[in-house]
Length: 541
Figure: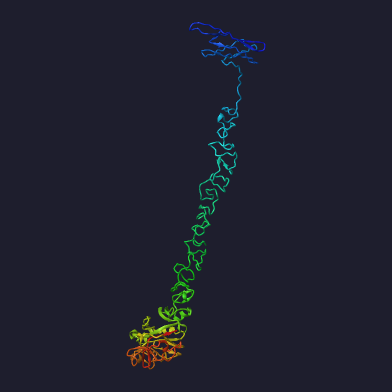
């Protein structure tokens, strides 16, 4: 082929096709001006016009699928310029230029941080602007970031690290009051990002409990304090009461129960622990007392339970004291031991102390048949009903404070199993007892009947009427020619000694009664004008 250029810069390609026939090894050849021969089968001529670099491209096809390119050294536009036309099998002549680089071409060009070509995406590692995805670029990198709002505000829904705001991330986000970033539920910020508060159901610092309710009667108060006695709130099923104070004298004790006589504390109106007051048993000796009736002894001195000196002292301290047996200390701090006595608390104001009792059965009065020294110094017999008894005579004077004397007679019925009639009461006043080592006297006694027949006591070995004791079996008493009031007597009246008196049918007692008023119409034992008595008791006050 030969390229010819005309004056318009148009190159004309003259193609000469040479054909030859030969044997099996014969071929077809093409010869260029340079002496190069290539194999070709068909050549078509194409005229291409170029403004600056004219080139002619011829496409050849041959059975050997080889391309032949012929360069003509004469193809120049001006002296010194050589054109190298390319001949291909494409019959179209084109002009090829290098494209400009762009984001998305798959090449990391200047100004690009990355370029994944078709893989670029705003949710991928390389964005559509060929910038590497980073947290804070406002684009959510799929699979890596949970969110990306493009700001540094950790109080919104997307926090540092491009994570969705959650309770426990350490940032106080929307709907949170706090967020300390830990899983400690007992600090100042709970695991639900709410400030610790009483009632949230979580035991926080400073709380003893937190059951999450406002019920005040269960184990945990609404203040998150454990229910306890003294908190002023009734713990249902546990406490009987709770008034929130330490006063045990009101209706609720510090045990959170109502005062009781067995709660082992001083409570209610008790004067001492579990004793005294209206409801509890009286207190023992030495216990605290507010009044005599706080004490078993019914004697309260200087705030302590003491022994009274007599039944009168007991009665004076406690007007409601009943008749019965009491312990007294007749001489206080003296040498006499405390002793039980019988107190008669009803007649003429009460306060009477029994000093002697004689009974129908002579065997029960044997111990009373004594001389003066035994009478003065020894208490004999028993306080038991229907038994003889006599307090030591030297104590009689200790009881003769008010100088009052009381005789109580219970006549013996002659039928009805010899039962006793109702008692008759004879009261004498102003009788002064004087007891020495050798004798005992009563002076000044104002008596409604002959309670005594002599001012001087007679015993088996003393006094003006010893024969009444030694001959007539009389118990020591104030005899003169024997007696109108006879504690015991025998002889012309009874074959053995019995108590007797000769005035009870005619002379009214303290209450205006006589024998006919107290025996219910039943007959009584009577001998020579003397009425037999089942019981004769002598009291002093």
